[in-house]
Image 1 (cartoon, rainbow, N blue to C red):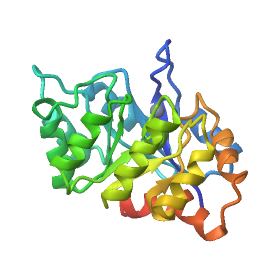
Image 2 (cartoon, helix red, strand yellow):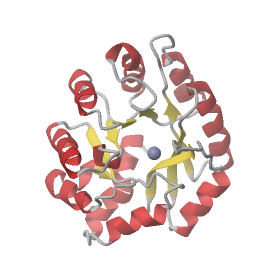
Image 3 (cartoon, helix red, strand yellow):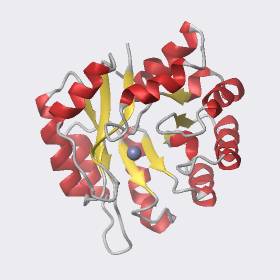
Image 4 (tube, rainbow, N blue to C red):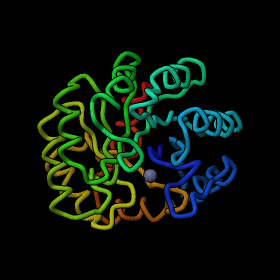
Length: 239
Ligand SMILES: [Zn+2]
């Protein structure tokens, strides 16, 4: 069993490209991947919920929807997130530092909804380590997945900070999506154990197979790969 924990219905690339459920499932099939977590960024929270819900409805056995929280000082989207979780079957929340402030006044209400519903937040740090470590300290009950081994830039010294953060905090996990310095996946697993790292691709702009191959060449044991590929995300999502 393989579950990709990081796929986009709408991407954060220059053209804000979109991927249909059909295209995503085809990409999963090529990689022998059973299921994928999907979300849409670069849009409002409400629109994102509508977009993702529509695609998940087509493939409810293959795609798992996450809500997208894009709050601002003027618009706290906690009610929209509540709706996405309660009425639209979203299983987690995506947040991107590039599109929203991680100040507690802005993101706090969303994180409180995540804790209330006991769903994970997948937060792209935008390499803003102080903001992420602030959230971790302030919300010890929050289940946090940090994509790209924490650092979207993939710089080794940045990734090391997030590995330490995950080592010191039980509820902090890292995903492997689109990590250029992919040997750090092995480093992360050696330092954290296999239960804190999740396979994700950032697909399908990034082909999920390339991200699987980064893991395969690191020669992990079958048991470690079981945690990476599905046991950790299944536990977090209560699948
Ligand atoms: Zn992404």
